[in-house]
Image (cartoon, rainbow, N blue to C red; front, top):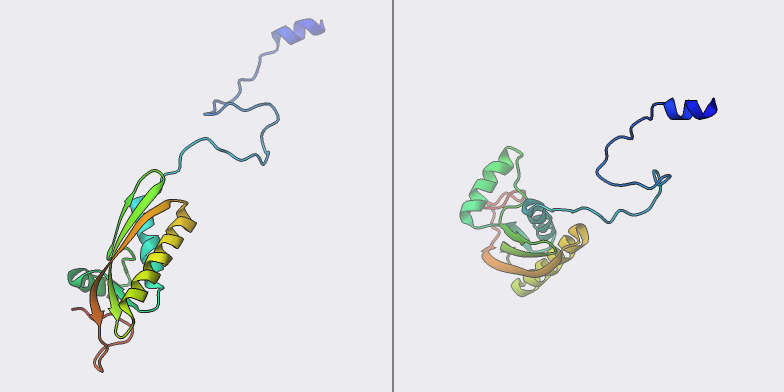
Length: 156
C-alpha cells in the first residue's frame, strides 16, 4: 500500500527559475559569476565630475555656456555633477574628457595632472572599468576679485 501512495501522490512542481540550482545550493555564499553588469555613461560621468571637483585648484567644470546654465541649476538646488564631463564607456574600458576652469594662481599643469589621476582612480575604483585616457582641457582661469561670491563660480 505504501507503493500505491507514492505513485498516486501528486508532485509539487518546482517554481520556474532562470538558473539551474543543485539541491541544497540555496543560501550558500558561493560567488555568482554569470550575468552582466552594465554601467551607464551618466554614472561614469558623475563619478568623474565629482572626482575632478575634489582636486585643489579646480574652480569649476564646463565651458562658459555650460557654467551659466549650471549657475541657474545651482540656484534651484539641481546641480549637474556631469557638467563639463564627456565619457565614452565600453564593456571593460572608459575614456573621459573634461573641461576645467582653474583657480589663479594654481599651477595649471599640476592641477591637470591631479585631475587626471583623481578621475582615473575614482572611475576604476568605483566601476572596475579600465580608464584608457583622461583628457583635460583647461577652458579658463578664474581670477578672484572683490565682487565674486565665494560660494558660486563666476559665469564668464
